[in-house]
Length: 234
Ligand SMILES: C[S@@+](CC[C@H](N)C(=O)[O-])C[C@H]1O[C@@H](n2cnc3c(N)ncnc32)[C@H](O)[C@@H]1O
Image 1 (cartoon, rainbow, N blue to C red):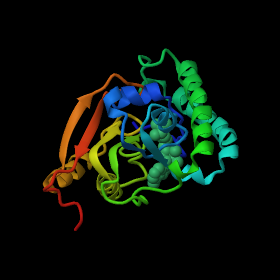
Image 2: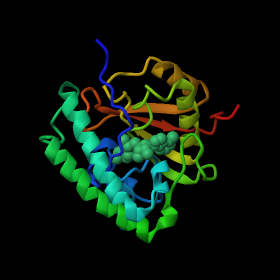
Image 3: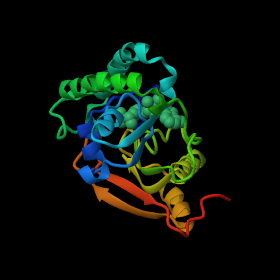
């Protein structure tokens, strides 16, 4: 049976509590320089800054002026609702009781994100993987939610190799990725091959079961980390 199609990529705005759950974040993790890529309308960067972290978000959507962002996000919420309601078997209601609760949490995150972006514009950069405008090892922790692996229908294995190498290049600690399936809950065909290439280049990896789950099967995050022996450029 053909998998349901999402159409345009979703633009989401998750609250900090989602990030804590997706990435198994402790208070100790929320310090130093942290990258959220893609940031979308998520409140993580704002709330991590309020907790003392030097947080930065990257997303091509920051080409849209901050005062037009809320209106843009309203249309994005409609798309999210239509997608979820069109494919109910793909979702599970444990983290949120239903789609209304999910979207209300996302709506609340928009203002938090937009206020921080207005106050700290240098920390919301319009850029796209696989090219990030940061020096090697600039961040202590990088979080990547609902882009990598998620849109395997439009980003192929080579894009993922380049995107993962770029996230690792700019990070001297963990690169945490959630989910590790596509938006239908399927593992991309080339997943093992892409991971094996990273391992062969000296990148450490581990899986962590997390408490967040909206997409069926999406119960783990992937943690990647460079070692002194990693050879990411060639
Ligand atoms: C589903 S949203 C996830 C946003 C946020 N991480 C969250 O969990 O709410 C996917 C985001 O990826 C962004 N995006 C699309 N292509 C990208 C690229 N090549 N590099 C970085 N971000 C990209 C989109 O603009 C969109 O905001």
